[in-house]
Image 1 (cartoon, rainbow, N blue to C red):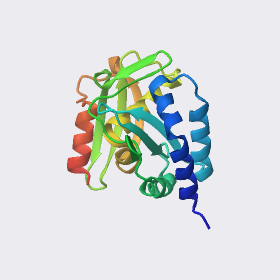
Image 2 (cartoon, one colour):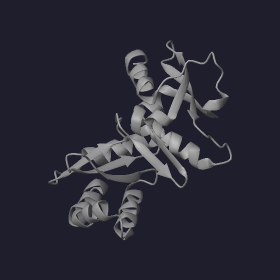
Image 3 (cartoon, rainbow, N blue to C red):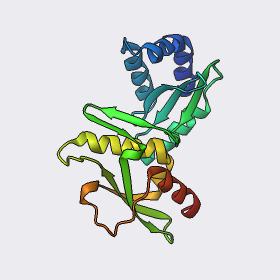
Length: 195
C-alpha cells in the first residue's frame, strides 16, 4: 500500500513548477489552495507556508501553527520529502534574524516589538509580554502578527516548548522598571538558558 507521505510528495513533484510560479507572482491562488487541501488531507492540523529565500531557493514550511500534536506528522512528512532542484523543505517555522510581516493595517518588523519576560530556569520555561507600538487590544491582527513574529524570529519549536504564557500590551503602558528585550535577545536567552 502506498504511504500518505508518498501520495503527497508525488502530487507536489508534479505541481512544483506551478507552485514556483505562484511564489514568484502571487497572482493566481488556486495552486496554493490546492496545496493547502493536499496538506490537510495528509493531516488536518498542518498548514503550508511558501517563501523564496535570498539565495533563490523556494521554501515549503510545514507548520502545525503551534499545536504540539502536529509536530510528529509535520516531522514525518518533511523527513520523507524527495530532493527537488531549487527547493528546501522545513519542519516548523525556523528562526530568522530578519523578518517583517503585514496583516491588514498592522505592519511590524523586529524592532517594532519589545518583550518583557520572566524566566523560570528550573522548569525551563518563560512567560512573556509582547509589546507593540500603537497596540489596539480590540484588533486581533496584532495578536496574529505577534504569534507569527514569535514563530519566525524565536522559532516555532522554542515557542511551543519553552514559552508558557503570552500576553500583549502597548509599549506606552510599560512600567519604567520593566526590562525589555528584542525578539532576537529572547531567542538567544531561550537557547542559552532553557535547554
